[in-house]
Image (cartoon, rainbow over all chains, first blue to last red; front, side, top):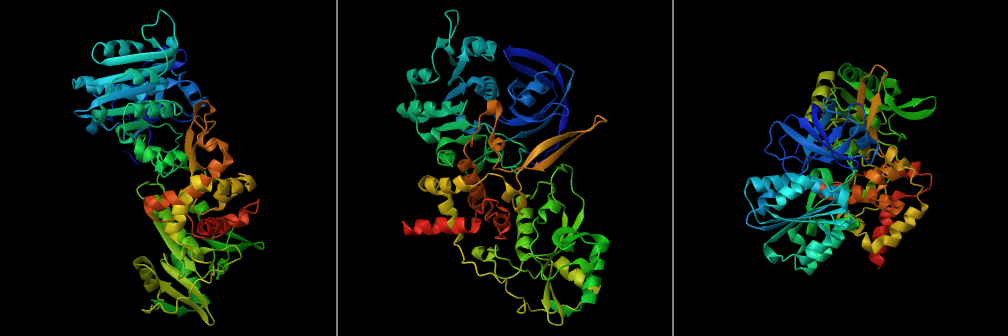
Length: 263
Length: 312
């Protein structure tokens, strides 16, 4: 983890619209990162926001960030075009507990934009030819599924379940909520390890569904989203109880963070 | 190590330090007591009364840019609680490259007011200074607290002795609070919901306490665009009492209620920092009590949450 706030300048290579208001930026340059780590991104002279890197960590020539325009900074970011400059600092945070995944049944649960920090992990696992992976991705509408091509591609190699709350008969996935595939899945109890990223409101429902399946809190890892201004543990915007999401997170084990969430 | 010196020699010491350092301290300005740049030794007020703003406005100023700080700063004539606060500030910002590297602390005998409660945290003797100045009947007694301080005194030619029994106690009568007990009690929010709600009901959420507190350093990043096209990225003081502090995209707020944010302030000061770094982010200077427009008394609040717990 870095402890400075120095920016580096990068150039945007490509920009792709992957949903209504969501864009994927491919950026020239190399950032060495662990899946689940995040960067602070700033369009020139304007604000700063936190994004997870979502490309395959083994790519050394470029990396990708996924931006949904829903605030002043992200709205400015999605107006940028290829060849524009962009400022970045990081990566910060701990990332997913990659070392603990060996020999476990890995279940990844993504809600909406939560697929973004999980994408590099899936790429990494597939690179290592680890097959014991299930990915449950839930979206609001079937039209705004992020990384649809990737999901279809992954579906050939690992167990992928995609659900959308508002579906259509032409949709290749299922209609429903993210808790549905959890309820249908046969977990290998103590061998399972669950990684969750999604809206905070989604997590309690997932945790409940998982505990019904006999999954304990120390098997569940959640990546949290908070407002961040510094990324190095100074500004205190991102605290969850005694933890700071930038310094101690963003990925926390549920049993460690559960008490703190009430504070 | 100590020596008795005259006012003239104190001026000599001041001039010596001023050669190398930017000297800030407590001074009188048109009848007001302020914390600012000192140019003459006559301006120094000893014993030192409390200023509204502390050393924070110099050491970690509002809207500071993110480059390294190469200033050499001396704080001449600050109270012992502030000397301790500087020490804690340095601990909090270790390895962050945001504070001046050379900070000289010349503390002085303090002049407590009604709001001081440093005794609550067991601050009995002055400490954390490079040099300490104490007023005596026939001059000033000077103590060296560090190698750097001793060297300066030696070069100025002030004699140093080797016992500090004449170091006066800090005159504060606040009842000592057990740190572990306070930390544990504050961390238990669930059983004290009514207590915190009761305080939040009286709090305006103005953030005055965060502005004057020497150990409140929450920041946000601001971007200062200039007409010539350049842009200056800076850190501005932020108040965790403001609603936008915990807000993310789509106006989703992680601490929507005033009670949530008020609790967070106490949690940061008495739990988070204590578990993480082993100290409270409060020295009992009492500035927050003086500044609060709602007349909340932070000393009473932390004392009463403990006595409440004991009663139950």
